[in-house]
Length: 339
Image (cartoon, rainbow, N blue to C red; front, side, top):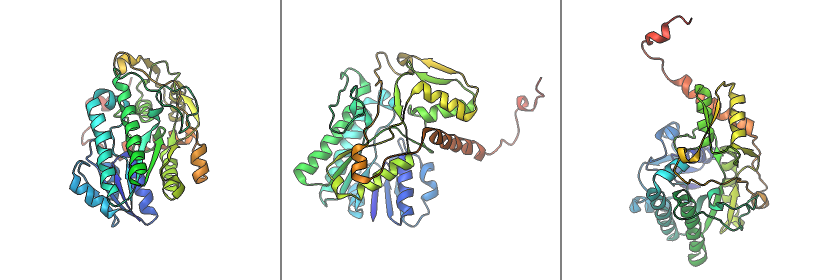
């Protein structure tokens, strides 16, 4: 099989590339490196079945060529992270909606399966937990930029499903719930890598809001396993499916787990949302997926426990530090005898 991954140099895309190569498939990635990184795929660049193109999906000729070369398209390219979304709402809408339309249009000419990555954010402020795929979506007002991401991804879903219904273009929509693991950066507001970095640095672990808001964190290996099992199932075509863990924990609880697992003495501090993001910022109190549909279609449900996930992320950041070369000369303060 030959696969195109848009956003292939991103956190999830790089792990998906590895998994596909391990099973003998050929991988093409397309990434403009706006949020992805060459470092994520540097170890794959010499692999004979890995082909990388650092360009935008708005390059229609290149996109069409790569779609034609592929049997399946994993459309992961998107604006990601709460901070980026709040700070760049125009980029969020343009990247997510226009990019998805271009991918679907290119794939529809040859009827190539498109796996469209959506997000748990589309459930918005719904209180009907756990979230099922056919549940109502409850978004906040358009005056709150925070909801632009959820709205754009919901529109992506509408686009994908419309191509399926109207043009018989094969699609699969997956709603991902807080996928975490090695290579994820906290640069755009991802909470777990941020907490781990703060704990390892001995800096305050910063909990936004009350800390009572809860999330479920899914190991990236489980997310990839769910994706690949769905793609191999004809009954999943035209469906919307949640992928995530249903092990729920509050954000304050996550901070405590990170502090314990890293052996850190960092204090846990709270920062009001207004200071962290923007005045009037709104968040969801709970975000828990129903995994019934995923299990029914694939016989699989994510099972990696949170402690193991935290340990894997911690080991990743520790290895990054260990790999950094020592400076040629130490500063005077580093050579001083401690009192």
